Every structure is written in C-alpha cells, then in structure tokens.
Amino acid sequence: MIDDVKADAENRMKKTIDAFKRELLGIRTGRASPALVEPLKVDYYGAPTPLQQLATVSAPEARLLVIKPFDQASLSAIEKAIQKSDLGLTPMNDGKLIRLPIPQLTEERRRDLTKIVRKHMEETHVAIRNIRRDALKDLEELEKEKMISEDQHFRGKDVLQEVTDKYIAHADQVAKTKEAEIMEV
Image (cartoon, rainbow, N blue to C red; front, side):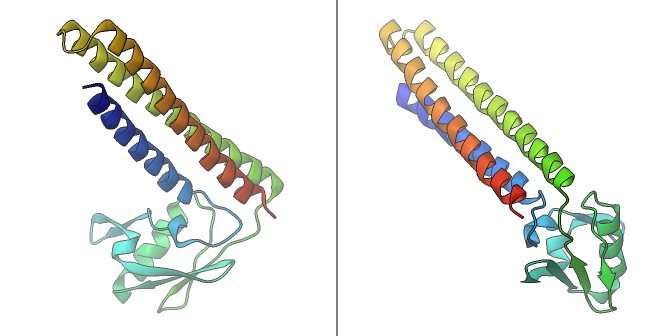
C-alpha cells in the first residue's frame, strides 16, 4: 500500500520535473535553439496552431534560427506571431523562409532571465510539495481505514519526505544548469 502511494507520488513528481525542463527550453540563452520558438502559436486560417506543425525550425549557426514553412501562405502569419511574442526577436523574411538572428544578451537581460528561471523553479517546488501533501492525505486515509498501521504511516511519511527532497534537489540542479547557461557569455 505504502509502495503504491510512493510510486504514484514519484511518478507525478517526475512529470513535474519534465514540465519544468520543457518550460526552461523556451527561455532564451545566448545560443539559438529551435525550442525557443516551437511553443509559439500562429494564427493559421483563424486557428491558433503550434509553429512546429507549420514549419521546420533549424539552427544552422550558433546565433541564427531558420524557419521554413511547409506552406508558403503561412509565412506572413508566422512572421506576425514572432513579432507579437515576448521573445524580442526581429524576423527577416525572404519570401521562402524566415531567418531569426539571435542577438547577444545584455547583462541586465541575463539577470532578468535568471529571475524568471528562479520563479519557475519555485513554482516547481510548490507543485512537488503539493504532490507530497496529497500523498500524505492518502496515507492518512489508509490508516483510518485500518489498511496500514500507525508505524507504517510514519515510515511512509519519512519515505515521502525523502522522495520530495530528492526531486526538489533535482529541480534546483536543473535551474542551476539553466542559469549557468544564461549567464555564459
């Protein structure tokens, strides 16, 4: 019983960490990465469509993204979506594809981005703690229903705390790596 609660909590915490990593992919570093623009929604024939369904995105150079749409008619819609986004990038349209030069980040912008990373990290910590809280409620329910003893309940609490600490440390490490990537000149 306790193992089931632990396994469920651990599975949910892994998914939380994965979501955190995906969020961080969208935060700009000094290098060009297709993940930077993939989550953008493009107004394509009146429907918000993810960019990755409309075009291929590649990074042929360290500071350049190239977006090649499958349908040439979507070129201007993709360009507008990039201009509306908060990426702060200026697309260059040559009629067949869009080039996105990635400018060097200023020191102030780097600090702002690390604050955003820390904010996402804190949200991840809260999500992990909420998962722990839910698992603790499950343990209490099991004890009330006499499916586990009081000793097993306390052992389960300790196990859940260890798992929680492990995933919070993992989130901290992911954030630290991303911050180092952002601050790298």
